[in-house]
Image (cartoon, rainbow, N blue to C red):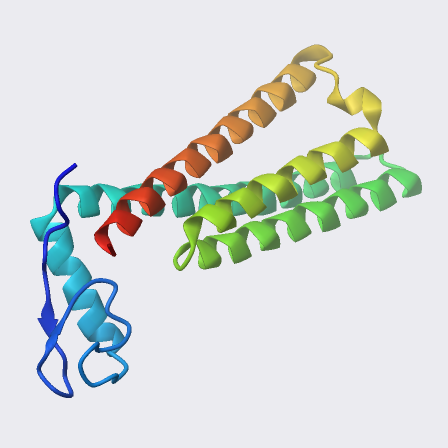
Amino acid sequence: MTDPLEVTVPCPSCSAAVGFPGRLCRSCGAVVPAAVREALERRLEAADEDFRDGRAATRSASMILLLLALVSLGGGLGKYALEVSSDLAGRQDQVGALGELAMALAVGAVFFGCFAWARRNPLPAVASGLGVWLLAQVASTIASPISALPIGVGGFVRAFLRLAILLFLVRGLVAAARGQRLLRRMTR
């Protein structure tokens, strides 16, 4: 492992060198503005391949959370629209569909929250997203055990989608851990 690359920007208050992560100037203690920190990070991305890889891994992890939020929201709304518009849907079916929609919206909102959190701290954000998704799967299976079985084409599609989502979340967790490890090395 090589020593971290020293890339700095001048402190706006005292002109001392500010390095990564650069939230406070070590010389005068002034808070370094976000624009200056972003300039420092752009210089680091251009100068250091490990830093660039770490940033790419954390962006990848957060994008997985955004994708899952959109899939959860879109899938929940689409399923609700299909179930409610069916001529065969009774009152009990509509109430069940509304409960499933509420769960999909809640899970989607949590994924959006984790996506926003991942910009600052990707590893716990992705781990939380994975935990929430797993809890939602357990709750769904408890509520309707038969729906968890891959019966028929729809059952196999749901099982495939669950496996794909699980793999995406695990991939995001691995990417976030890798990114955090690389970025931590830069702060030494």
